[in-house]
Length: 118
Image 1 (spheres, helix red, strand yellow):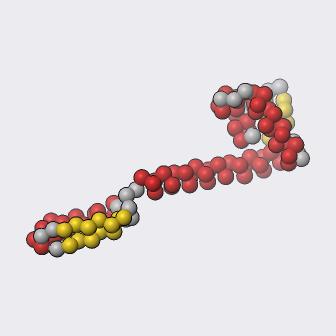
Image 2: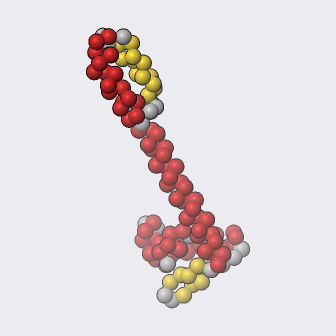
Image 3: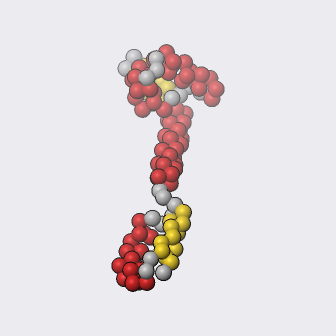
């Protein structure tokens, strides 16, 4: 439905989704039967959403955008390192060179708990 509404035709939606035009048409017809209203005005020039179709399209679009957002967040969380990092060093190196770099490390990797052992 969403692809057909965006494309303005079953044929273009079918090309985008790599399905047959008849498969898209049947799915939209089944959806219209399920919800009990026409979602498109069918014209020779293509498809035009009905008022009910427009409402469904906006809702479906919002849901798809939220799914894309959560998919991105889940991927980012999966790729982000986390856990405990224990660093054992001498007092001289820990108090000087290492201390200057700890804040930057914490900002770059907030999911890592850093333990310095001097």
